[in-house]
Length: 111
Length: 112
Image 1 (cartoon, rainbow over the protein chains, first blue to last red):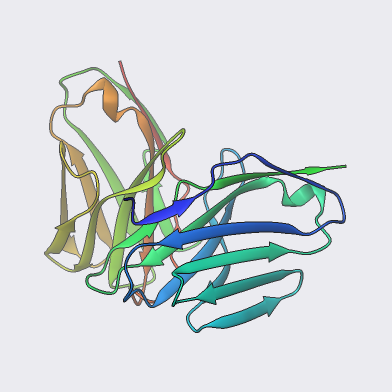
Image 2 (image 1 turned 60 degrees about the vertical axis):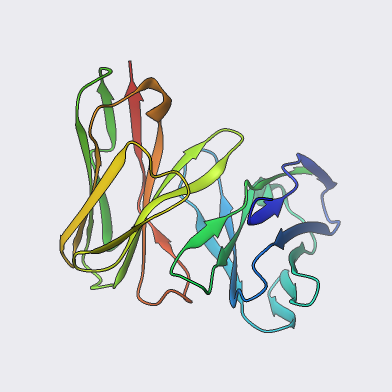
């Protein structure tokens, strides 16, 4: 089992709707979780980090963490065409200093 | 990205030749990471460093070596490049392992 798993998509969402992206991880003791956005040909850029169970909101973005179920999700409200990108989930493996990424989910916002 | 520079940005090399990629930071961050990105595989960790002369292997370390003799520089070496090492390589830094990574602009390496 890969340590961080994401559905590769593509996920197509109409403009203005909510996009929901999911990520599961295998290391139960992981403490730090990150969502990055990557446009084609560009470097990943941080959207949100989350460390505690529950929700964390930043503008149109909400990250949700459930450590008992070992998943972290990202909700994008009022989706815009500019949100079309690949979204990468990353997890810090607390047993060492590794930061492992999922394969990423391609999101396509339909105008 | 400000504070982190990868060089070269693009490189074409032949199978069997040695190649060194450089990551230079001006942020004085402790942690530095090398990833490769390939279609269908996302970002995969090659090697990382948690201090000067302190390095460890990642998920896909075979065929790669690294060195960190100064805080600001983290070198990735392909001892004998193979076509399977054609990829985009990203360097990333962070001051604390529980903090977000900041990425360089990437190096596109083609091995012919």
